[in-house]
Image 1 (tube, rainbow, N blue to C red):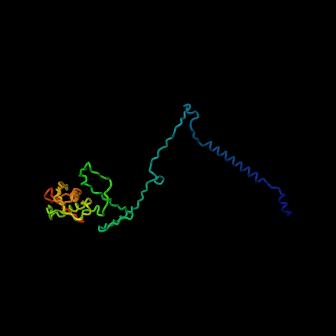
Image 2: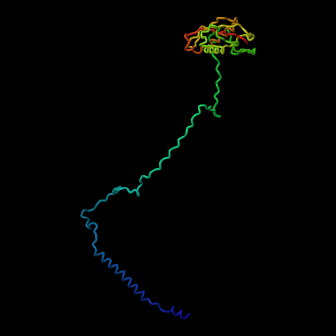
Image 3: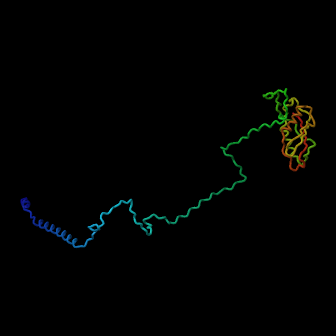
Length: 265
């Protein structure tokens, strides 16, 4: 412990540090002077003349922009956007839709939601007989329908309608004769005949049928003796007209036809 205390009491020598500092500062000062001397001996550039060139003052104007020099040369593909020239993969062909051949024998099945078209009710045939009648000044009419007094009311003509023996059609135009007979039978109504009358003599009605199907000269050639039955037969011919046109092979432009009406209930 005594030896350590003696070390702390010894004076520290500063001469080495002092002379080192003096040498360092002298070296720095010598370097600065040497640099200044070298710069003074080197030639230097003069920017402008101290006298201003003898031109006086120079005006300086403000410009909106300073044009930059254009640079021309090959385009650098790395520094600029260029169009890609890489080959594109071939486009895939779209698959063609195979169309299934239609089965000509197939029967179409309507959809469950398909609208069912209902036939419109058949319109009543025109009453051509009534249109041809003249009203008498002392005749009374009513807007109400006829009173139903028997189940035979509105019964269609019974018995049958046939072409007379003097038919001009023969066997060659039998189908056309049947067409006329069925059409007249459809329009023959016996509502005006006494329902208690079950049978009656035949009525023959003759008329002229033109090629276009029109009818003229309707007349009764054989009466049944019952006025209502005769009128119903004559009215059936008038309501059924016009008829289909005469067959093209028919040799004449008009034909005299006779229909026979027989009432049987």
